Amino acid sequence: MRKLIVSEFVTLDGVMQGPGSRWEDEEGGFENGGWVPPLFDEGIGAYFGEVTQNADAVLLGRKTYVSHAGAFEPDPANDPFAGTKKYVVTKTLTESLWRDTTFIREDVIGSIRALKAQPGKDILTDGSCQLVHAVLEHDLVDEVNLLIFPVIVGSGKRVFPNGLHRSFKLIESKTTPNGIVIARYARAEN
Image (cartoon, rainbow, N blue to C red):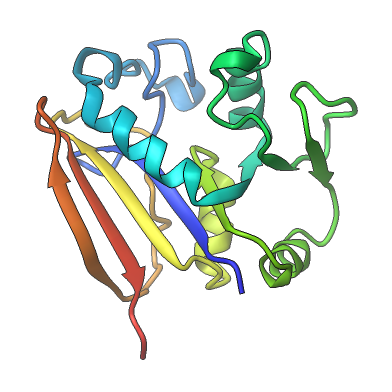
């Protein structure tokens, strides 16, 4: 069975909202976006090089998909997801914005279970707050990778939903030159 890996940029206070820019995600009045670019370094690039080599699919929510498609589709030569199948959970998108895209519109959890059961490499998920909460709540996540940035933003969307209880074990940790801690956790066997 394929692994579903959730990989998230996160602040010290657990916020995943608006990492790329002040205007990326202002939902709920969030004004503290843009906390990744000042600290982005080669360690983060190396991490993404590793995880994308081990994956042949990405699973995204609509908002994250639109953001990624806008960043990567115009420049296929520099697309880290070139040749990677994209699965997008959406009820509203009607046409693909990025190569190799399949929409998941109904029975989301059943579709993800079926995707995990197919032969292939790892499936990556990043951003996609509502989707991440759903796959965690339905116990579909095999690994959680947190890229922890040394900033506190005080409010915003959190990586983990309230009331969730799951056990993981640390399988690797490293620190990048700018102090970002990359912590990889695998699902603990009960």
